[in-house]
Image 1: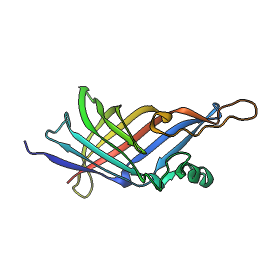
Image 2 (image 1 turned 135 degrees about the horizontal axis):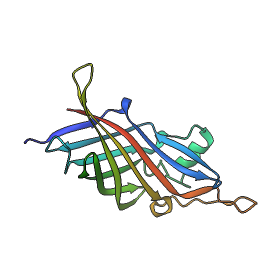
Image 3 (image 1 turned 30 degrees about the horizontal axis):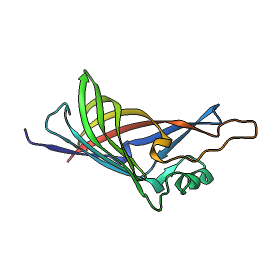
Image 4 (image 1 turned 45 degrees about the horizontal axis):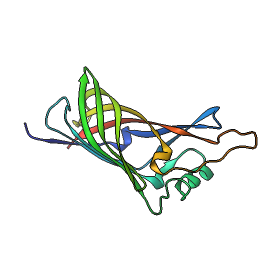
Length: 175
């Protein structure tokens, strides 16, 4: 079977992260600009190659001052490192459950990483485009990727947690 390329449909996809703030609540953010492909040799995506990149400057936490801080050298340093990226392979575990293993790069640091993936299925849209959907989840320690800014409140509480949950709902369209 020939290799088929699928591209992320950004209008039907979202890339989010969640991190504890003051240890008592969770802040959700997203990247508004991203791109990626899936190259598959079979219809069930087992063994498919995944490439993804997000534009750091597109970070959005629904609070402008926080977004600017995240883009600064204290965190992502968007001026120096404008993208974060992932390259890896999908492996079917059972049913609709997959593992996505590969290399995650944030700033100048690349580390092996594994996501849990749920395959949502395949459908043809109103315009005849063949699409597939995936829910992707994982957790990182932000400090392992050079996102080391930290502060403590006067009462001794941590301002930003170290663990970051990564969540993506992705729809890809067959090219």
